[in-house]
Amino acid sequence: MRKKLVAGNWKMYGSLNENKQLLDGIITGLNGLCNTHTAVCVPYPYLSSVQNALQDTQIAWGAQNVSQYEKGAYTGEVSVSMLNDFKCDYVIVGHSERRAIFGEDNNIVAEKYVKIQEAGMIPILCVGETLEQRESGITEQIIKEQLAAVIKRAGIISLSKAIIAYEPVWAIGTGKTASPEQAQDVHAFIRKGIADQDMGVAKELTILYGGSVKPNNASELFKMPDIDGGLIGGASLVASDFVAICRAMNI
Ligand code: 13P
Image (cartoon, rainbow, N blue to C red; front, side):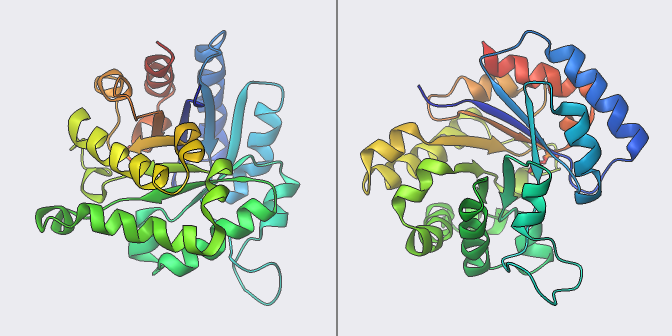
C-alpha cells in the first residue's frame, strides 16, 4: 500500500504564539488518527520549537527549502546538515514560488533534491504548470521536463525515497482548485511516466496534490486513484481545516 500523506506548507506565515496555538489545535484534533501520515513544513526559525512540540506525537515536521551547497560562504542559506540537527523528515523542493520568485531552475532543484536525500531526509518534489502553459496545451511536457531533470541527476530509483507533489501554479493560493479529474489526469501521467522506467517505483510512489485544497474539496480529490494525499498551504494555517483535510484522507 502506498503511503498517504497530508503535509502543511506554512510558507512565510506564523509566529511563536500563533504556531503554538495552531499545533495545539492540530495535535488535539488529530488524536487517534493513524492511517494517514501528517507533517508540517515550517519556516526555519521555528524548527526548534516545532520539534519540541511534535517530538512525542505522530506528526512529522520539515522545512520548505534548503541550500544546494553543503557549507561555506553562502550568506543567508541553510544546509541539509542544519536541518538534520532539528530532525526534519521532509524538505519541500522546487515549489513554484521558489522557481518563479527566487529563480530556481530544474538543475538547482535537482541538486537540492540530491542533497536532501544524501542527508537522509525525504524531498517533497513539487512540479506543476502555469495557467499559460496549461492553456497552450503543454502541461505534460512541462511536468515531464521538471521530473526528467531530477531523474537524470539522481536516477529513477531515487524516487523510492521521495514524494512528488503536483501543484498546478494556477491553483495555488487562488481558491481555484483543479477538478478531481484534472488532478487525476496529471497524477496518472506522472505515475505512467515513472512506470515506463520502473514499475515498482511507480507503484509505491506517493503523489500529493496541492493547490487550494480545503475541507470542502479534499475528499473528492483524495478519492482519485492516483492522488495519495495533499500539500496544503492556506488551510494548513487553520487547525480545524487542516485536521478536517487529514481526516478526509483517512477515510
Ligand atoms: P494553497 O493551499 O494556499 O493554495 O497553497 C498550496 C501550496 O502552495 C502548497 O505548497
